[in-house]
Image: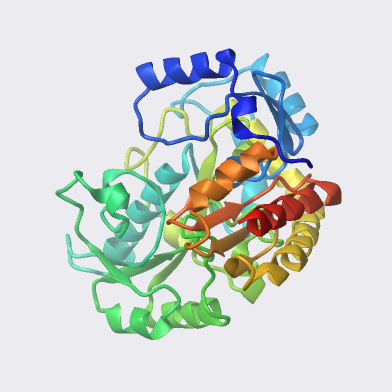
Length: 411
């Protein structure tokens, strides 16, 4: 890829779209100045016809690429049949989806929702109800242990246990019942558990933090601790799951099975918002008619897409491809440590790089990449995340490595 000045990519059409969006849509994001109009595979095209390698993939929602033929075909077919019934009635797609996702997770049951945040909220509610009805925690006293540096969504309850000041400022009072401990420190988790503790909620890999991984063995130790202390182990696999890390779930890297899986993003194939939690009867049976629900949760269109996503994952090819992409990224980025990069973290097709802050910010790196036809996202100052679709080619990944190398060299 050859370098192109960012200003040459901004046309009157782009400027008009940005101006109108900024005028009528709330400013809860600070996007790069590109207006996307089309996408296929790992590539997107803006309103001016410029092509970009998508190295964010909708925060892992687009694991299978833009306009994936199998998923689009399923969605089109279902669109012409039935899209929504509400759960006041059964529909002919939910049964297959529930069975397939239960099989993929190895759990007895699933509870479908829409957004990832809704799935996290669902897991919180289920764990509290389990705590009262099964574990015997006194009414109103259930507590959940969370991890510092977490990102689980943006609802009022979820930001209540966030330590991100941008996400929490101005939204108090917050929901009580959460205790935050150091990520990856099983001793800190053990010290925080008491008779009121019903669950430990964690990300196997902290995506928003910059693809941060806990120490080797943490997941196994946490599994043993939760079993010993009769506490639910809840894995938020919304970003890390469904092949992104090179395994079906990031927990698979330590052969650990949590009590509750939380899934989203890629579960809808980048086409439709689909999320769910999965657990066994002993946990999920606390949910009874009327105690939780969603008008759109488990709708026929979502279920049809989700079923095809599971079928694709069961083939194993996307997990294998993620591992290959990760190896190529690791080999390309690792030599740059000490030459503009301070750290590199890679797990499957997911990478975080920490740039020397004396050189540039993560936003500046993202803008420089955009000028070279690559879209990525910064986080926390000088950190940039990369999560290309799992259909990206070796040539695509080589282009990413070359672009980062060129930018750091130009300094």
